[in-house]
Image 1: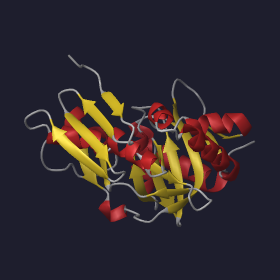
Image 2 (image 1 turned 30 degrees about the vertical axis):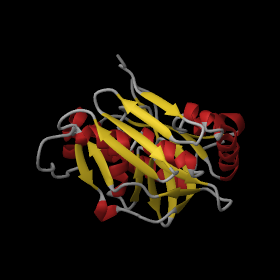
Image 3 (image 1 turned 45 degrees about the vertical axis):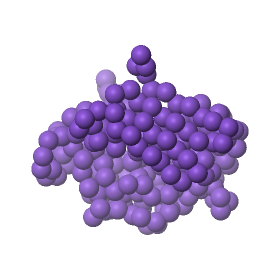
Image 4 (image 1 turned 60 degrees about the horizontal axis):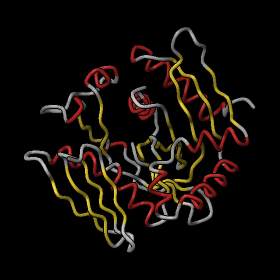
Length: 258
C-alpha cells in the first residue's frame, strides 16, 4: 500500500504524481495536467497540491525555474522572500502589501532567465492565512470554513500584479527570537549562491529531467546580478507592523552590509 507521494517520469517526459488518498496528476505535452481526485469531497485538497509539485514540474519542462518563496513587486521590480515553513512570511508579506507593495506569487514563484535577465512570472492571486494572521492584519475573515490545515483562502486580486517583473533582490528571512537583535547582511560569493539555492523546488525532479545543471548555472548568474540578503526581523504577530516597517527600509534602501 502506497503511503507516501510518488513521482514517476517516462521516456517522453510525461510525469505522474500520485498523492495517496488525495489525487493523481498526469502531466503531458508540457502544457496539460489531468487531475484524478481519489477521495470523495477531496477536490479542495487536490487543488492545494496542484499548486505545488505538479505545477513546479510543469515549469521545469518549459524552462522556468520553480522557487519556493513569496514574490512581491514595488515600482515594477520584484522581490523574493524566503523563510523556513511556519515562520510567518505570508503574513509579513501581506503587511508589506498594506505599505504599497503588490502581490506577484506565493508558494511557487517561476524564475524566467530566457531573456538574459531574471524575471519572476506572476502566480495565482490567492493566499492562505490563519485566523490570527487575518486579525493581526486587520483583514476580514472569509465566509465559510477554513481549508485543509486550518487556513483560509484569501483573494489578493485588489493588490495583484499580473505582469512579469525583473528581480531586484532575494531576502532570506528568519524571526529574531530569544533576544536576538535584528540584522540585515548582504551575502557574497558562495554564501549568496547557497542562500538562493534554498529556494529551488524539487531538485530531484530537475535532476531526473536533466535540468538541474542549467538551473544551477542560471541561479549563479542571478546572484551576481541581484543582492541576496540575510535578515533577522522582529518576531511575532504582535510585532508585525514593526517587522514590516523595518523590512521595507532594509529591502528598498538598506540593501545590507557587506
